[in-house]
Image (cartoon, rainbow, N blue to C red; front, side):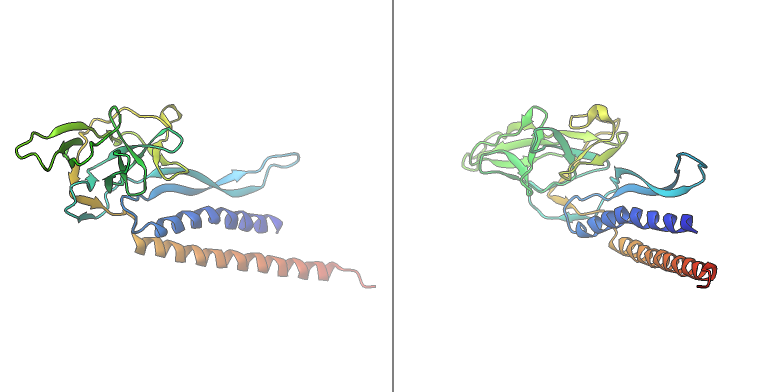
Length: 254
């Protein structure tokens, strides 16, 4: 009887991770470029020790892999807003100096003249952060080329300011870092740049990509999980009742 109770309790504990993932997805439904994940699955784990190795408890196999399916595209008309196509990701310099990646494309020029996104994360070019001379009008090409032009000089030739670090992640599974950025799942490239895949990288200027989270689907998962939680609590309660009844019947009269 205790095995059933332990199994139900272990499953309830595992559901905490699933609830956290779904809650995070729902909280980022409106976040620019947010990507949902394929990450959690229950599996049976045999508990071994002295005596009989018969107890099997449900465990959570957690490996968060970014789902790079596209979100809805929203036209903004802002030349520094970009939406990445297919499995293209954009390089970011993390706060600890490592290289991370994102699909967030709401770019701007910071007070220090460097290109960043609206979250204040520094955008990387192929040769490091991209600096924009003061007063330059910036445009971004489909291949990630950043051009600058003086608005006061009529007929001035645009100046090449750099190339965005764009990578094709079609053959490189990505996971989410603690700071929310993406990084390769393989240890070899974690916190580093990785070789781009076989598909060409490209983006659309003047457009932002929305989250790819389906709020209706996420809410249904949350409701299903609530019903499962209630059934397991009921199972534990019934086990306790049966156990107490059995103990009462076996109790010797005084």
